[in-house]
Image (cartoon, rainbow, N blue to C red; front, side, top):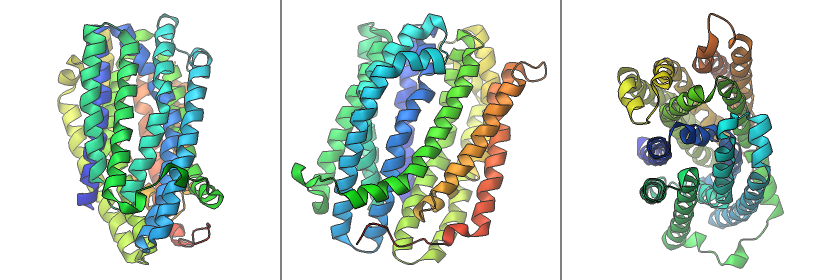
Length: 437
């Protein structure tokens, strides 16, 4: 499990590093308002990425179960249909992002007026590259489904190095501001998906497709949709909930928005171990279900949660001990730094709770009970958003509820997730893909 999980963790770390480079470079060379503009897009951008991750994971479950059962022809068929489906979704997402950026950030997200134009400019350019992100996600999911998690690390390394170099060129040298950051992201994502496609065709004969072979297979798309929809909905719920929290943050002004951008970026680092183990357990479970080894699934779940807690606690200790050193990288004002230090210390305590249950989502996904994580996410985000808006104007919490809301939400999510696991409901109807074999 560690051998499979560590490349995923390293790849996710690289991904976060180059997103962090965006914020560090734009904050230091284009100012705090530009930093706030880029940060304001994070939660809304994840709404689009959630669709890519969800349906890629759904197709990955199909591929991993057929791979575990030794059915190579079905692996090839499932992957081809998944690629075609995700590319179509990516094109639609890019168009929607470009067309609806301004009303979304003005009305729904509530971006402060002083950063609205930069926010919209950044997001429209970023959205133009969503086709690349959707393409990369489906190729990475297919490779993980056949046990190759290390390859995605190399693709992300290419994207990370290229993104940072282009950030420096476009922002620090050419002074293109937020537009330069978005263009750098699009170019690096395009190179990453090209590398993934080349590697997959060269390394695995089963995936050496001609373009005409990437056909729309109705039964496979239906199964991909059926399995992936709850995963996508789960992530969309998270994105919508965080976007509502972002709206509350924006209500406190651009200084708080800049502070929250840094705090949220650091929180994503704390999520890396549990998210990587969720992905690991989804593939591990799918392959073992295909092979008829439920005993290994239960053992993997226990060990996965333990690993998640240990890794999350170690990262949290670093954030707790060195908040000032972290903040110094981002060029925050003195007041924003005060907010940010309180934010970092709070999430260092809270996120260990998240690490204790998120890996179980992989077990539910690998056994096709993808509605369970959706239910858990909905409950947790409902609590977080509700408590934020209920007490944000009170004397006791005030703006600090922006970071303490996770305590209430994650405890709720953990209780429900573990209750579902102990009920053993996830063990029912675990086999029999609906698409005809």
